[in-house]
Length: 318
Length: 318
Image (tube, rainbow over all chains, first blue to last red; front, side, top):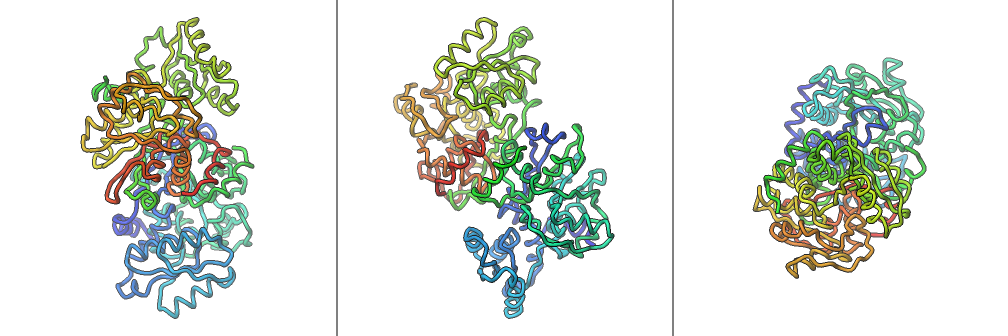
């Protein structure tokens, strides 16, 4: 288990490198959501997502020798970008294994951050990453099931609790649980009165299922529009944090997260990747209940989306 | 002429009603623009644009009787929305004249804010507004050529100068001059070392032409993608403020403001109406020069744009 202390240490460690993103008031969403709406605009973070917090907290604890050997990950998304930028900031190097199927735009984004890229078939990518890491003596940084990564993500919760201690609810997108594990630990430690609620894809309800069982269980892997929330099982290190600190978990349909992303974009003027609007979708669909006097903060965890993807928003009604 | 005092009075007057919007750091734009990029995210303001500042500052100085008679404007855009919301907040009423040609979405947005809507032909709309105002004894609030409106818009500059006094440049979208007139007065009064630069459409270079002449001149009305910056002549009250306080003025091509909006959306994760990205377009095109060490703040004045319009961004390259 991690606690407030690990998260405060992480905050001190990464502060010189990251952006303290604002909690913004979004009155244009109040009517549709039925509460006083705030957003932790983490889409304004370096590389456009929260992942840099955990990656830096992990890498800042490596020795000179470990930094020289570098880090490896199999992720063409926000975790890959975060590791690439962290490595560049710290004079280390990152190697990112990207599936052959990933679009060039993702490959180029990773390369632009200075990382080395190796392509592989989607099924082999984790094996390839492990082989290369072993050959080089490089470190594989897990995207969520790592205490230092989770403590780093928790700094986002620290900022929310310190900037807006009078919130009623914080709603967090959930995949493996690194973000909500850290955020809930920070928020509940500082402000026990704030409810912390998770939102995960209905197609991959790994936390809803695991919380019901009382231990991590694996759910069937299925495609979802929430393409940054694809873990089919809670992280073993994340699950106890979530079980202890999180007040509720909603499983959200794909259409509702698109509705959430559309509302956030057109009325809130923030661009979120669809996964990051899942909490808004949870309230829109009634899966998370709120009331007009409540101050509710949605963690907008990332903004990696391109224009062709936005066409999907045309098909849904807010 | 207005001065710092009128703007400070406006700020005190409107503070209970508006959002103090954040100046956000946008590192994802640094490379493309060649400076340290900040944005005054006024797209996060009530009704999604700065216009509420001026409208409230004007209406908060009306008598009970004047409030009872209400206000009138011929604007289907941000000014119309701002007056509608101001009237609702203050227990007054707004009547907005909207051209027959305006899309339903605009009409519904105004109606949703509680205003009465009258449709007219585009050429007759100002005459219709004047006739109705006369009949009702209601006040026509000008969108920019009004000292109280300009002082209200100036509060945005006050916030920038107080939140980020170490900026090097502030870049402001320009139409009739209400926004830049107020903002430049506030910024230069508090922080004379900050350069304030305007960006206007190359198709409607009313300030470039007027500053060259030394007095307000009318330029030929032409269509432009900058559809919130359509004034073809500076406001008589705005021009002297701009002449005194503004350090430079750039005339920006339509394609460059689209490039600016695309960069802001995909790398900055903020949705701006195309007009509001004109300052970013000015730097992208080299019309405004910046350097890597400079802290440059772009005023993102509004975010009223819909999904079909965003398709236009697909055709330009950042």
